Amino acid sequence: MNLLTFLKLILQRLSTYGLQVSELTGDHNLNKEQINSTQIIVCTPEKWDIITRKGGERTYTQLVRLIIIDEIHLLHDDRGPVLESLIARTIRQIEATQELVRLVGLSATLPNYEDVATFMRVNPAKGLFFFDNSFRPVALEQQYVGVTEKKPLKRMQVRLKPILSLFFIR
Image 1 (tube, rainbow, N blue to C red):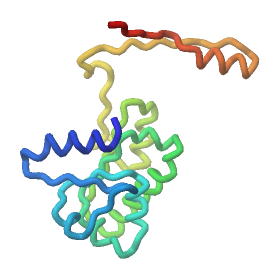
Image 2 (image 1 turned 60 degrees about the vertical axis):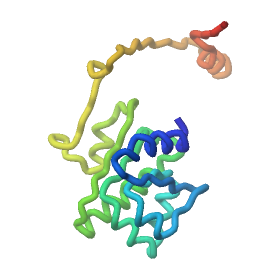
Image 3 (image 1 turned 180 degrees about the horizontal axis):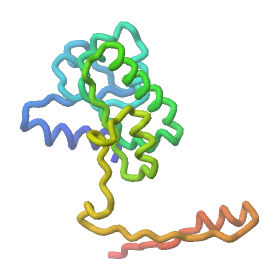
Image 4 (image 1 turned 90 degrees about the vertical axis):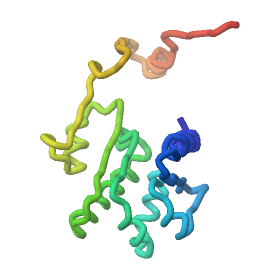
């Protein structure tokens, strides 16, 4: 789901509660009035990184009390350094100002969730929640495919070969 689709879904669901949701990305900026009238800002990590680096924007970052980072497993991906700096900067801000800001990291595929929780300064007894497959309404089936090919090029071809292809015909 892309950001625009996600934003429209949030707007639709939260409008009944009288909450204003706004997009803050590289493509869409907000002026002071819009920020002041907004309760929820949907933002890319890169845009929030730019805002939190600016000294003049501190008044807006002081208003934030909850930061939800979806796909926190991207710490290991190309966006990882940006996410890591955002988390570290937020933790430093919390410690320096003693303001209560809740950091929430979400992921469906994070095997080292305990390490990430330690980095985010989460108390494992009170603030770390792990939901295994028993919480899913539909069970997932896992299969492991071993690749025994020694040559790198052939090994890559075997790994990229689709295991299952579905075709829908009307």
